[in-house]
Image (tube, rainbow, N blue to C red; front, side):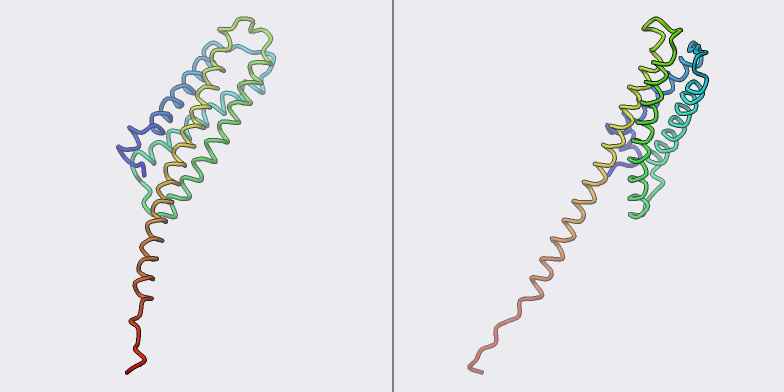
Length: 169
């Protein structure tokens, strides 16, 4: 299972950093150049959702990179929370970015929608990274369960073999 330096150099760790950079860059570009007076609500929602996803991604990355969680139950909870938050943030960023792109009619050029496009790419990478991290954990749990079952099964078979008693005795 991925933890510490293994997580930092793994595909899910790299995807988490790249998605974090994409969402941060997209939000920064929008904050600097994204004037949209038609939809103040979606502007605030876009900035809030981008900021929230960056903060949650940093916390999640730090927990995995520092290898803070050790117990199996906590690891299970952490991985389920990771995949749930990854997909929740993915759908939130996707919806907000698409609505933001369509609501601002004053932005006529394609370059004006770069921030939302970068955020969508970051959201997709966030969902893929969360899925890969969950699948890596789940496969390691399944392998451990299979080893435990195989060991207990061979022990049961060894204990169940009683020597035959002879009728002649």
